[in-house]
Every structure is written in C-alpha cells, then in structure tokens.
Length: 429
Ligand code: ACO
Image 1 (cartoon, rainbow, N blue to C red):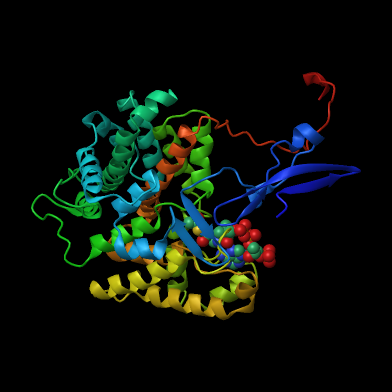
Image 2 (image 1 turned 135 degrees about the vertical axis):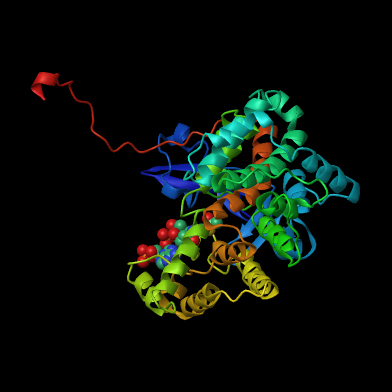
C-alpha cells in the first residue's frame, strides 16, 4: 500500500509519510510541512491532530471500543481491581501476584500526608472548591519530596516507581482530608489493613467511635468507578499533563495541571453537572421529556451525553449504568434520579436529533448516580474522577519523560489581530 500522502498547495506538491498505528489508524506525518512549504495546518480543537505516539490506550469511538494496553475495558472491569489496572496502564503489563503485592504495599506505605501540610488545608475557606484544593495540594506535595520533583529528567525518572505509587496513594488521602476539612471534621488517618477504595471511604466517613464498615458493596462499586476512569487517551486533562511534562516539569506539577484541566463542565466537571441537571428536572416535575425538547432547541445541554471521540455508546457508561442500578438495589435506595436518567437515555436514543448527531451517554451520565448512592457529596464528584485518572496521567507523563526524542509541545497559531501600527501617545488617544 502507498505509504506516503501528497498535499497540493497552489502548483506545488508536497509529499509526506503516512504513519500507521498497530490498530490500523493512519496519520499523515506533516511535521516537515512548514519548513517545506511555509504553511501550517489549522485544526482548532485538535479533532484531526495526533499529538503523540502512545502505547497506553486504544479507543475506536465509532465502534465503542476502549482497551488499555490491548485489554478490553469490559474484561478489566470484570476481572481486575483499580490498582491492577493502574499497574497495567503505567507499566504496560498486568502485574504478577508478587508485583501487585509490592505495588499495593508501596501505595499503602505512602498513604499518610506529611503533617507539615495539614495547615495548608486549614488555610482554605470552607466554600473553596475541592478541585482547587486538590490541584494546589498535589503541586505543594512536590515541595515535600524535592528529590522526586527536581525537574531533572534523569533524577525524576530514577524515583519514578516511588513517585507513581505515592501520587496514587496521596491523591486519595488529600481528597478525603479536603472533605473532612470542609465539613469541620477531624482528619481520619489511613488504615493499612483496608484495600484502596475502602480505605478512602474510611478516611471520608469513619468517626472515632464508629469506624466505617462496608456492608453494602460500596467499596467494590467505587473501585470499579475508579478503574473505569483510569485512562482515556489524549483527552483535555491528559493532553495538559503531556503538555506540561513536555517542558521538563516533574510529575507532581504535571498532574496538578491535569486536575485543573479536568475541572471544567465539558470534561470531568460533567459528572457534577449531570446530577444538577437531574435534580432540576426532578424539581420541575418533568420526567425528562420537556428537557429533551429544550436540548433539541439549543436551550439546554443534555449533560453526560455526547463525546468528541465516541460516536457510539461509551463502553464505560454501559458498565456504570448496570453497576449503579445494582448498587442502588444493594443499598436499598430508590433514587428517582435513576428513573429520570433511564427515561432521558431511552428518549434520547430514540430521538432523531441525538441519533443524527451520534450523541450517546458518556461515562459521566451514570457515574454521579453511583457516587451519590455511595454517599459522596456532589462537589467531590470531579475529585473522584481525578483519583481514578491519576494512573493514566502518570503513564502519559512516563511516556514523555522516557522518550529521549520528546520535544517541548508548542502549537502555532494563525494571527488575526491588527497589523503593524504606529504608537499613539496617551494625550492623543
Ligand atoms: N446535548 C445536546 N446537544 C449536544 C450535546 C449535548 N450534550 N453534545 C453535543 N450536542 C450537539 C451540538 O449542539 C452540535 O449540534 P449542531 O451540529 O446542531 O451544532 C452537535 O451535537 C455536535 O456537538 P459538538 O459540540 O461539535 O461536539 P464536541 O465534540 O465539540 O463536544 C462534548 C463534545 C464537549 C462532550 C459535548 O458533547 C458536550 O458538551 N456534552 C455534554 C458535557 C459532557 O457530558 N461532557 C463530558 C464528556 S466525557 C468526559 O470528558 C469524561
């Protein structure tokens, strides 16, 4: 097959190699376009731009396929834990029993936060958004581990295994401490005998004389939620992590930037927006039908629907839809929001507007219902996403850091402002 492609600009032809991924995805390698032709590509939103070569995650949005390191998300959800999937994303292979034990021990060892950081939490006002606190704390954390956050690639990589386990562990502790601080509750220290998700619920909800006990399967449901968020290719936050990493920044700084990028309602903030939407619909007495009409008329957006890449069902939404129903049943919760969500989904999937635009539920559509059932407050939802996405950010940072040919990311622009003008003195303006 022809492995070059030609771009014709005016009378001139420019030939470029075609790169092919292991799943047959093709890309025209235009890295020399500007130097050869003086022209650049314009692709606002990067819908057609491959920013990197990556071995971590494969998505076929048309077919609704998501695989990490070759393993379908359905198989991982069925058989793995969040920590196993994290190890897979970061190191490329599923761990052996010994590797998993070592990784888990490393994660457990790093669960506590340096007491010097406690006063940082106390400095935030009680109405501070938990994502602002999380981002600030992750970056501050680097200050307590200067040997891991040197911005010297070789040195940061030499400490990589420990830094990765530390971040996966401490992001969870920081999240729980943020919640406790905002509630005016004393911090609960991690319990090394509890597994990852259960330990988080313990740090969130235990009281001195009433330790958290998982009798309803909430920890398993949370672990599944985290696993389903572990990585998702070059989305807004992961691209941000890679962008920051490309300048040589350490892992703490890079994932802290990822948290900021995740915050917005078009990205990780959508899980909060979904619950708000469902609550508003419920409060208005609508069963969802009127809201669907508003969305079609451009008066509202059906949050948790649509995706830049998936033009089919997001496989994670399918798994979460089933598990949120099971969790609610297990906890004996009858949440009217689940009924509204199911009605919205059915109505949208049958409606010409959504069908034509290939708008399907994304991961955020059911995740809020699941988190709400577990008892996580709505303003913590995006933080939960960040805990889940941490291994993906780490794996992407590692790819950049380990690539000796990696260049600083520096897109170009098309300037549309004023052309050169003479300076106008103040008294003449
Ligand atoms: N509700 C109603 N209409 C929608 C929706 C929606 N949720 N999403 C897209 N559309 C419509 C657009 O209005 C547009 O219609 P038009 O062709 O008549 O102008 C068409 O579908 C295409 O939409 P785009 O905005 O071009 O799609 P894009 O790929 O840029 O945006 C996005 C994707 C941001 C996810 C969008 O679908 C959205 O805002 N969804 C709701 C927010 C959400 O759930 N975000 C989470 C995404 S998943 C994640 O980050 C974890």
